[in-house]
Amino acid sequence: MNGFFRQKRITGIRFATPMILTLALVVFIPLIFSFVVSFYRYTFINPDFNQFVFFNNFINAFRDQYFWNAMKVTFLFVGLVVPLEFIVGYSIALLLNREIKFKTVFYTILTIPMVMSPVVVGLIWKMLLHPELGIVNYFMSVLGLPYINWLGSPKTAIVTLVLVDIWHQVSFMILILLAGLSSLPKEPFEAAIIDGANGLQILLYVTTSLMKPIITVAVLMRLILAFRTYDLIYIITKGGPGISTDIISYYIYKKTFMGMDLSQASAVSYLLMLVVMVIVVILFRQMVKER
Image 1 (cartoon, rainbow, N blue to C red):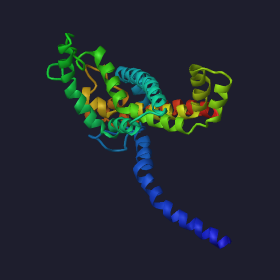
Image 2 (image 1 turned 180 degrees about the horizontal axis):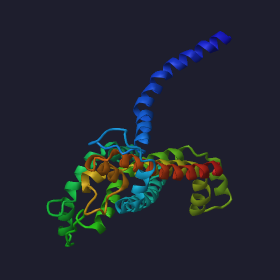
Image 3 (image 1 turned 30 degrees about the horizontal axis):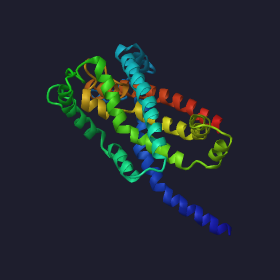
Image 4 (image 1 turned 90 degrees about the horizontal axis):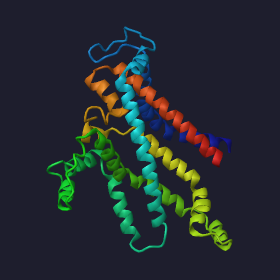
């Protein structure tokens, strides 16, 4: 029997080894390399580890006003996108959790934006929102409303990006929350109805209470993805107008491929990872506490 379990363990290690090696090559080696680079003066013009600068790259990031602007824009973007997507996604998930006709049709419509590439989504909405040739402004003119320069004004550009991201990513939130709603036990709802609870009380004190772990996971996953948003920014605004939509991921891109400063970009990347990890740990601890 011991030989059987030993052979089974060896077989499992053999199957897992290719995956572990792939993860090491794709994830861990770049992480280690970028961590080492962040302590050197390493640029594409001078790609050598001959100038150790210790924490200077991190200090320079804190001294850069564009870094703080990127952080401010990032937190504004994430602070708008995640709560709005949760509210919209939870509302639609509650509606779809009922017995309604053509439910499969609604599922199909909802999954279409989610499976589309962010690059394609960005190109489509960039054409639709064109100030003169876009169909959105055309319909606004038909209704007698003035044209809006959706992407040309600092005040409207960030709001436009938030709306586009919600259109693209809200399906992700809907599917996770809908899966959670469909797996809830029926007994607490039956007991609440017998006790005379109305619909709002059932939603607040039964449904939402039972859904708290799933809500935390959904918000956590969407939060991580929102901090990593890059494709839409690059395709639609490229951080503009000015630096009004210059979120931290695009700031890192500019530092790397426009500033040719891989060491500075690596330092900022680790600062972003630290911020995301702190938020993830807080939410994870909250989820464990709720359980």
